[in-house]
Length: 299
Image (cartoon, rainbow, N blue to C red):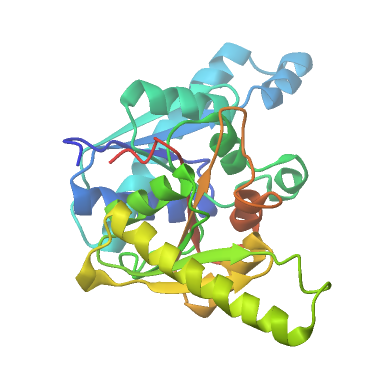
C-alpha cells in the first residue's frame, strides 16, 4: 500500500455533499489519510450582478470564496461530530471555475487517491440531462471517484463488484479490497446469450449451465489473482442479462452499501460490456458507487 492516501472531497455545500463529507471523513480516519475539502464556484451567476451594477464582481467573488471556506470547515467539523471521532488532518480550498475541471486539477495537484462527491447537488434536474458533476469527474479524471448517496452510520459492510475480467474491473476489485477490506463481497459477472432462439430448449439449458459453470470458475480464479484471501470468500454471481441492470439488481438483493465498477479508456466513460454500464450503475444504484479506471486504483 502507498504511504499516503490523500482524499479529496468535492462539496457544493448542499445537504447531499454532507453525506460525501461524512463518508470521506470516516474513510480518512480509518486509513489516517489527509483530507482536502474543495468547493468550486461557477462564474455564471456573477455576470448578472455585473450587469445590474449593484455590486462589484471582484468583491462578490471574494465574499463567496470566504463564505465557502467557512462552510467547508463547518461541514468537516460536523462530520467528525456525527462520527464521534477526531477530525483527521484536513484542509479547505475554494476556487472559481467549472467544477469537474477544477476538481480533477486539484486531485492531481495533491496526489489524491480518492475523490468523494455527493450524488446530487443544487442542480439535480439539470444534471440529469447534461450529466452529473460526478459523471464528468469520472469521464475526465484519472482518480477513483466515490459517489456517496447514503448517510454513513458504519464502515462499508457489503460490497458488490462488477466484473467483466478486464483490467478496469481488476483495478476496481483491488480498490474495493483496499477501501473496504473487512466487507462481505459479491462479485457479479453478467452475460447475454445469443443462441437460445436457434436451438431446442434442452440443448440451450445444457449449454447455459456449462457456460455459467465455466464463468463461476473464471470468477474465482480472477478473485484469487487480484488478491482475495481464502478466509474472505466472496459470493460469486453469474447472471444472464444486461450487465448494468444485473449489477444494480444484484447489489439490491445483497443489500450492498457500496457498488464498485471499472471505467476504461482515455477518451471518457466507456462500456464495461454492452451499453453504458458504468453510467447505468452510477445513476441507478441505491447505495454508494465507486468507479475505478485501470491503473488508477491508487492505494
